[in-house]
Amino acid sequence: MKNKIYKQRGIGMVEIIVLTAIIVIVFAGFIELARYSLITQKRSEAKIEAANLAAEAIEAVRSVRDEDWNNLSSLSLGTKYYSVILANKWNLTLTDPGQINGIYDRWIIFERVYRDADDNISSSGAEDPDSKKVTATVEWNDHGQIKQFNLTTYFTNWTN
Image (cartoon, rainbow, N blue to C red; front, side, top):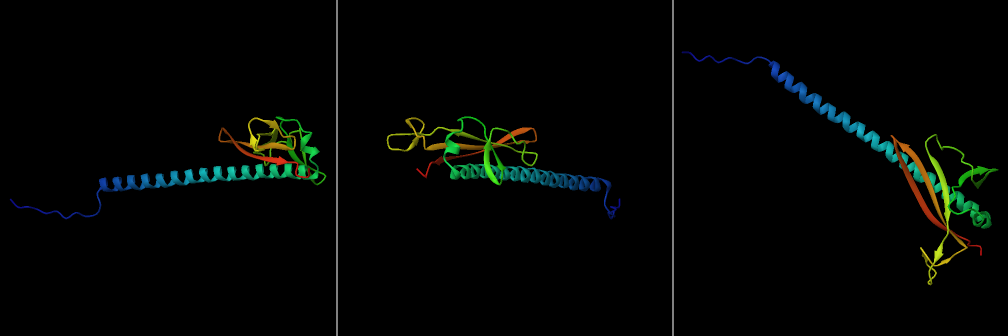
């Protein structure tokens, strides 16, 4: 019996199918990675914009306070206020101006401030009429999920 050695010519059909499957799987992985990166980038951009809008609302409150402390001290506590520009200056109003950039809702809430015996801000103690806790909230819809960004600070009647 003679051993015949066959020379393999070209690539067989099985090798082509396996190679094609590997290429498709790798390509699909890259596509999914790119899609995930874009979603993550858009969510990060939305959160950054929300943080900037909240900071802007805090600056609006600072502007109103700097004009006259009575502008803040006369506001109702626990009520939603909206920062708007009227006559080239920041104002706080109860009227919702609508969404910002068609995406974000923004409001500001004022709360009482209490101080302990050492004059430190605390959850109880004597109420400080010359201080207000201010929380700026920005809310948006992220693919069916409501997201919020809150920024809280304290304002005082520094002219007193």
